[in-house]
Length: 142
Image (tube, rainbow, N blue to C red; front, top):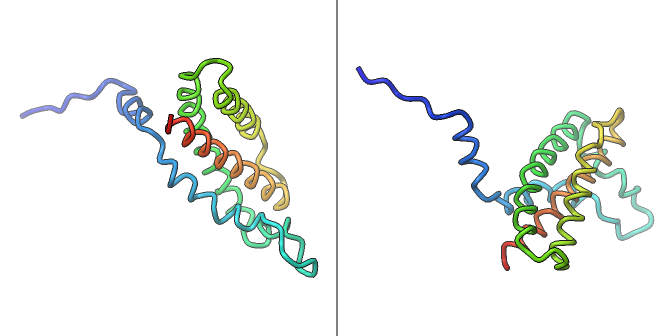
């Protein structure tokens, strides 16, 4: 009778974290929310700032925000590792590190007590995800 040996703790996690993030899939996860965050063409239309809140319920906004937080936590180390390969004053490195700082600030946002706040938090997190994806793409192409 053979016994399977257990792998050392954290090995699977280390292998998983070594994989590059699927930036395309991450970016796609933000499109629906951010597409509603654009200004409307006619002044007679309802306030575009309410579009996200009208389309998603509170629990859905909370779930989206949780997903965006996970994406940010995945992207920050990947972008930072790539940025640190550049010289310290390189514009792409400086810009990426500033973006990382903003994203970390966004992670500190609370969940919100109302749908309006949950909508704003989810939108800010989605924008940070998009920005980190752009920086990752820019840094990987070098």
